[in-house]
Amino acid sequence: MTGQWKYFIVTLIIGWCLGAASGCLIAHICHMRIPTGSRNRFYRKLDLTPEQRSQADVILDKSRQRLDQLFADFRPKVEDIRRSTHDEIRALLTPEQQIKFDRFNSKWEAKFWERFNSIYRIRQESKS
Image: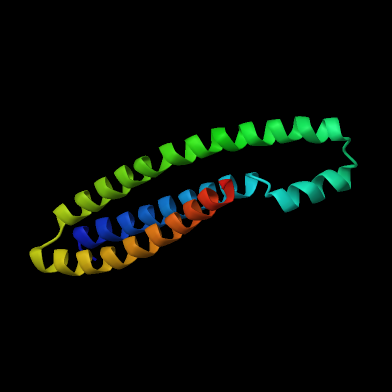
């Protein structure tokens, strides 16, 4: 295996790991917000008093706002890492390899951002 292909494989593995890690973080952030129906079920199971429910609502809403800000800050950082990784790998390749890489990467990128945006859209819709 040539040195260029080793770098390419390593970069793909790094990209996959970054994608997996960001997916886990996104899923974790999305699941931390308890939807209204689940929130009521949660309150009933704990037998919370109306005062406790009110206090828990304030805590959960405040937490959601903080997580939403974190999520908003997270996307540009993911894009920066993804873009720099792409650019570094592309610089290693021959023009023919670059064409193949661009095709492969555009498909992967479309799937990644589709998943990322669908999760973000779910979070945005749940706020309304």
